[in-house]
Structure formats: C-alpha cells, structure tokens
Image (cartoon, rainbow, N blue to C red; front, side, top):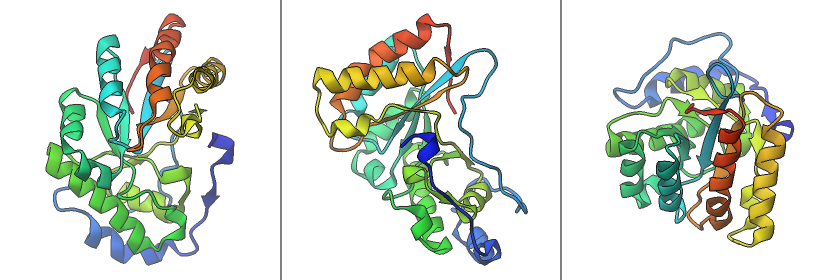
Length: 239
C-alpha cells in the first residue's frame, strides 16, 4: 500500500484510552508523559544528506535468514518490524537480528487492522509483541508500525505512551503481491518500484516483507536495490 493509500481514522474519544495506557504497559518498558496531541507518524529516513532506510515487515519468516545474510554481506543496517507471534515461532532469528545490531520494531502480535479494535485490544496487541521481544532480546521496541498503515489517534497515543515512535514508509515495493513467486517478473517489478519511487526522495523509507510464507522475490531483488541506492550516494540508516 502506498503512502497515499494509508487510511487514517480519528479517535472519537482519546480520553477513553487513559485507563489502558498505564495498566497495559509492560513492566520496565519506556513510557512517555501523556500528550494532548500524540506525535504524528514518520515517513522519511532520519539523518542528514541522502539517507535510506530498508524495512522488513511481518517476520521472522522463511526468507529472514537470507535477508540477514545479504545485509551482512553488504554491510547494510535495516529495521525489522516483527510480529510477536512470529517471534515466538522463530526466536533464534530474533536473537540473530538483535546480535547483528538491526533495529527490531513492534508490528503488533498478530497483524490486525488496529482501527477495528478497541483501545484495550490495541494496547494488548502492542504489549504482547513488546513483551515477547523483551524476553528474547532484553530490550523493548522503540519503533512501531501499524499493520496496513492503519492507525487512529488512539493508536498513536498508545504507541507514544509505550515510548514507541510510529514509522510508516515513503517507498512501497509491493513485494507481497508476488505471493511467494520468485519469477523474474516479480523480482524486476520490486526493483523498479524501489528505484522509481526512491530516486525522487532524499530520505526514502523502503517497505519490504519477510513473512512466514516466504518472500523469495524480495531476497533476489535486495542486492540490486542496495547497489542502486549505494551507487546514487545514499547512506543506509535504521529508524
């Protein structure tokens, strides 16, 4: 889903979240003081000059190890927005991501449409995922990406209360549409979207996936994407 397609729904009563915020935060997690207006989502890579952030959603999955290997080989940092239930299923990969210094973000426990949930259920999705990550790595996530890019003021407030900044994306490779195919068509399409959308931005955040079902086209496209941005003077950063 491109940035223009992200749905944003206003919360009808932010005050109704207040009872959830403090009760649902995992013990020891970072918290922020309540704010009348929570921080807005970020779409662009941080840093000065030309920077690019590679991000991978929905893992860990069957393609995660291959993605880690490529990032290692090219010396490139990245941000993984993991699902709590997938971390529980593949804990060794989460620990490997942490050991390599990749940023691990919260992408909820089970990938629901957050705006369809109550404040309490949204908080539970965040907290279960954060607790799982803490148990595996010793650290709570400080970045959050809502599934499908769907969020409300309640979502933003809950994330802020948990010390998590919300990051979306500015370049969508639509790699999930390959549906497990590794055909040249999908590989080239992913590369083309990354290059076409990214080259007009000084700070692109590139959205890719590493779902349990596998994203082989993403794995095949990744080296070319890395070489493209590097050749055009971009510095790779994490969120």
